[in-house]
Structures are given as structure tokens and as C-alpha cells.
Length: 135
Image (cartoon, rainbow, N blue to C red; front, side, top):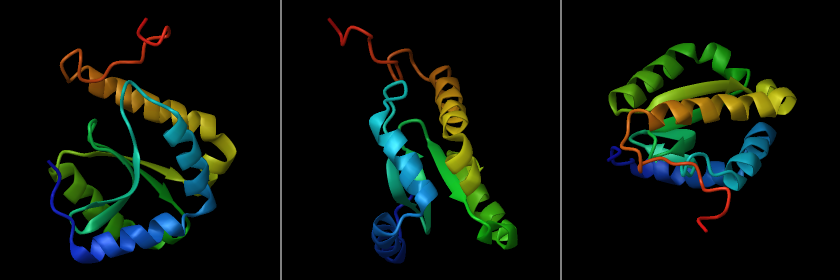
């Protein structure tokens, strides 16, 4: 169970869904089309007082896309990551230019992180879809 989102976080998350950065749009197009080991991602997810760019709640995985403003916000990001970690989330961070220049590598890193989660869950918890569609 995730911590209850604050009212302010809910309002901000809605606005951020409308005003995604280009890097967020690129990654969202890829994440929403993919089904990684039966894990589904949501975008701009309020978790307590924070908003995760992308989160797979089932796998307790948060994916953050950082722009140049995060260089100055390193202490805020560390505090935020510590909160998410205490709540049982693993956080992956990528720079905007990682998404725009190397999206395939980013997707592979996310896949690897999800595959690692599978090892800590019962076999049926996270399973890759059958190539034959279950037939």
C-alpha cells in the first residue's frame, strides 16, 4: 500500500500529466505500449507528498526523468528518494538527454530492474506474457 497522497500532490499531478516534458512524452509512449513482465506503469503518480514521474506500483518501482534543474535540487531529490525508499520503492533516475538520445537503453534498464523484482515475488506475481497469447 502506498502512503496517502496529499491534496496538493493530487492537484499538481493532474497539471503535470497535461504538461509533460518532451522526454516524459517519449518515455510514456514507450512505457504505455509495453507490458514488462505483467507490470503496468502510471504517469505522474502522487506518493505521499511527492509525485513520481512514472511508477509501477505492483513492482514498487519509480522512474524519474531529471532535467538540468535537478543539479541544483540534489538535496531535495535525496530527501525524496529516501522517503520513497522507506515506503518500499526503488527509484531509477535518468537525464532528459538519456531519454531523447538513448531511449532503448533506458527501456532496457527498466526491464532489468523489473526482472530483478520478479525474483523477489512468487512466480505468478510478475510473469512475461506468453508469446502465443495464452493459447
